Image 1 (tube, helix red, strand yellow):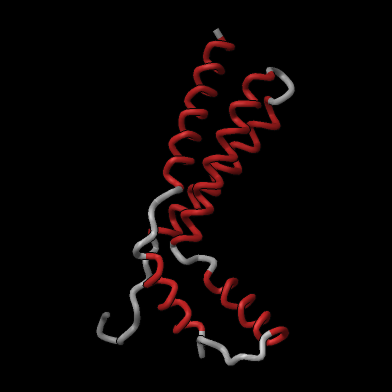
Image 2 (cartoon, rainbow, N blue to C red):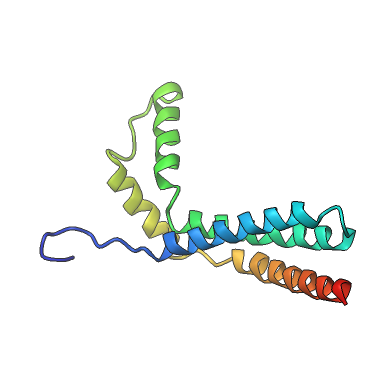
Length: 132
């Protein structure tokens, strides 16, 4: 906490999410640019893009970026279909609860990131071999 009792914003997840989004966009661009010239490039690149982007989205979700949407859907569902009172009075309470439950979760997205990185390396090697 700083002097004004404001919570300091952690920008690291947003920066990494931006980089992952940029890489995903570039990957899709190059996939469609070269997909019809050689078949092996698009198959390995597509697998790499799916795995890396899925791992990135899971990581972003685990950092709490989508908490506002899940809170909104939960409140909407409770308002329409549930007769019991809401567990969380406001978004801050819900976010604190989610942060506490995230602490003990494993980093299961790392395996997808590693396999996607290996596919990306294979893609680059096959591209270099093709150009020789």
